Amino acid sequence: MVQLNDLTLISQVLILNKKSAFDLLVKKYQGSIRRFFLNQTLGDKEFSDDLAQETFIKAYLNLKSFRKMSSFSTWLFRIAYNVFYDYIRSQKETCSMDSAEVQAMHSSNSADSSKKMDVYQSLAVLKEAEKTCITLFYIEDQSIEKIAMITGFAANTVKSHLKRGKEKMAVYLKENGYDG
Image 1 (cartoon, rainbow, N blue to C red):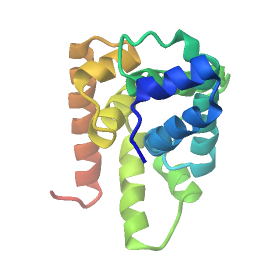
Image 2: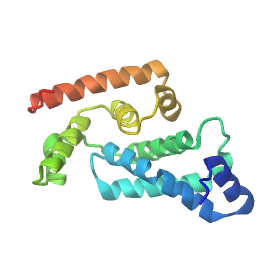
Image 3: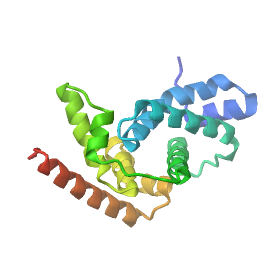
């Protein structure tokens, strides 16, 4: 099968009303969007899946507004970013999750799960902007320029969030037995 690029698939959706072309875009990007939300929600798989689904619905409904000023993936991550922060803003009473709450929500006995919990717990000590930048840069392998486009932050602000976030995570992990 010939690999179709994003613009070709978008054109097929918009011009030919070919929904299967959008399905291919979903299959291509669902892993990275779900992973982004999984890290933003500190490992809540069901909630992450709900947010990812909402992201793809919004992308489909607003596909006509894609202006090719960035890559489709950057545009899609911008929607994901907005979906997450719309949810955060909609919560009247936000409570920050401390490590004990995260541990209770995601407890598991395996060593691998324990390491994942430590990463989620270290992400939990970050401010939302730091967590977003860390997730996009280190986990989703987005460039600083793309993160700036996704979040609307200046590139230097992204760099600052990355630096502070990395320092906070290192302190947390070192205090919890990681020396590396």
